Structure formats: C-alpha cells, structure tokens
Image (tube, rainbow, N blue to C red; front, side, top):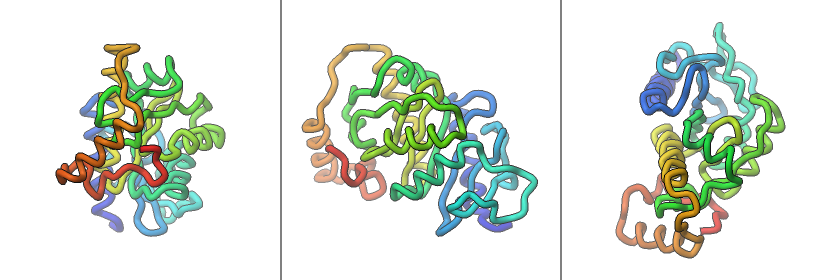
Length: 222
C-alpha cells in the first residue's frame, strides 16, 4: 500500500481529534501533502473509526490518483486551496463545540492568551457558506491570511501546520482559546505588539512550541 506512513498518521490524527471531543458524527477531515499529491480522509467517515486503508489520494487538482472505492472528503476544495496558498504540509478540520460557539457570536476570536501568537494572532471567522462550496473555500482562504487557523461560522474550525501533529495541535489550541473567551467574554486581550514580544522572547529562550515547525505565518501582523 502506497503512502502507508501518511495513511497511518492520518488515522491516528483522526482518532486523536475524535477522542478529544473535537467532532461529532461524520464531521471533520484531515489531509497531508506528499509532493504533488494529497492523502486525505474519505467522505462521510467517522474520525474515531476511519482506517489507513480508507484514505484517498488525489492530485493538486482534486483528481483521484489511485483506485479506491472511497470518495475524497466534501471539503476537498478547502484542503487543496490551503496547499496552494500557504506552506502547509498538513490540514485539520473539525467541529469543536467552543469554536463553533465563538464563530456564531463574534467576527474573530481575540488573543485571550499569549499562546495565540502560535497561530499568528486573533483568529478570524469565515462567513457561513454551505460545505463543499467555492464560497466556503474562498471565505476560509481569506480568514487564514497570515494565520495558521480560522473559524467557520455555523460550521467549525480549520488549521494547518508542517505536520499532522502541529495541525491538530493548532486546532486544539483554537478550541482552548475559544473556551477561555466564552468563560470571560469581554475580558482582557493581547494586541499585536504584546504577541510579537511573546514570539521574540520564546525564540530567544529556545521555547519548543515556537521553534522552526511552529513559527508564525509569513506576513503575520505579529
């Protein structure tokens, strides 16, 4: 089986998101890039039970590149667009409760904790559009500008990274920040100057989460 390592990593990452309560039913999908191909979870799968054998391989135009009885996730457009427009090597999307709650009540998730610097700053909310649509793809692309994560109104959240572990960690961090925001609405937040100081201090002290694989996006306002 080609891409056995990537397929196994996807199944483990999917189980991680499901075990963390970041999805419900068949919601959520993940992918990883391998050169000019993308390996991703199939349409309609449950993240807690999806297997390595069920993963789908497509090219960067979305054409299925290897025979399979499964179809790629309905959010294929979002995954491919992220690979086209960012340095992402892995993408994670899920439907976490706190993230959806914030996305439905605000236009952005403010930097309520200094770890927001790992994501590029305050997290934007992409306006609602039906899943799988070009409109949703475009909205997510705009929300991800200079960020490694975005919220999706009435839908969920999406994040990317150099690895599946980092993409999942970013998704988990967004939901943790969302829970803080919901617990203390209107509370103190950090501006870009403060977050820039966080990044500079962490790098000077060789703090691992802000190391080479977790740097803020190019063009970030941090």
